[in-house]
Image (cartoon, one colour):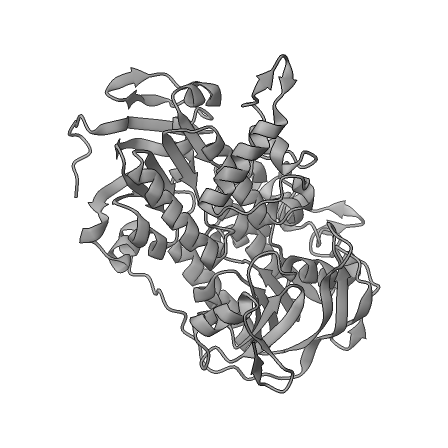
Length: 520
């Protein structure tokens, strides 16, 4: 392991003995991180370990309570993102910093506008962004409003924002959390190319495969403290996971054979209109999910998975077909009525999972506060709510500064996700719709969530899983359906199909003919 106390002229950034507290909770406790010129330096740790806080200090979003930052050996003061930008430090944020009613183009150039004679040079900006998107394989629709784009495209917009500003120190905070496998491969190439061009990258990720593939060194944090820095070529995934969690971690999902029972969800010839163009986003889709099984919808982001889930849960209206849940036609029912037999772990925890300015305890009973357990004569029993929330915090290891009283907005992304999962799994519904359930979680939390989903399956629940993570698709599902351009193009047994074959269906190169055969 490197000794972080030793100085070196090759370091472009040094964060020495950084300390940051929030409401008496020490998020960063005497952490030293040193970034070499032209390297990709991974930052690894559990949810709430202090990674994003440390990077927010470097980007000027937080002011440290102790320690110093040096650039090229000189002490610098970074009191705001403007200071960071002036020092050519850029950051791709885990939680998008985008204005939803603006277009993709406007979001990318906002704050870095070029003008001629007082007028915005939109044509030149468009040409430069198009060149960057083509060079780095970051496909976006420059004229689409952010509110009408997928989560995957929003992530690409964030990356283009940083590239557009030509920063030399690039912070990537969970940049691949919403990208498809092919997009992740492309981003890995982009990062390597940027490092080869002399840029220095700090890369926060929970995905050990990515860290092993792309990074030169890895620094591990645990509970706000520095654990160590290792050369990537001298370590392995198991060692890194042990350093991160402090115990051996099971990296493979352990589950027995599924024993499917009665049909819980029956979707027949279902269609959902697109929010951004005239044709349907979901076209004539039919499938069933039975109790005691995990059915996974796989596909490249933007091929109708989000619209399908919105239609099934009632967030968007369908325009054809039927949906039956536990034998009841729910096609025209409200979100609330559908929720009587359905739990939903949403794709976007900020938009559909949490009310960010509510406390954790308020979020935990959003759908349940009128139940007898939590109210008496329509007055909320606050002690019961707090006790219930504390129980879920302990069971699902949700880490926060003030426990049940913590504002959801102030929690790390991974702990926000664990809070949503805790609430939805504890509702004990017959159907669990889990969309990207492990997004932003560390390996220890992923291990726990996977085991909980398997327990729910074995307890007779029907689970509809939507995931962009092929490792998760292959290891967790009992059946796989592939969506391409809003249609189901294939059904597979994960024990009999390869990742490569799935990829052909996900890209539209193949589709099944309805009789189990494949057509080009």
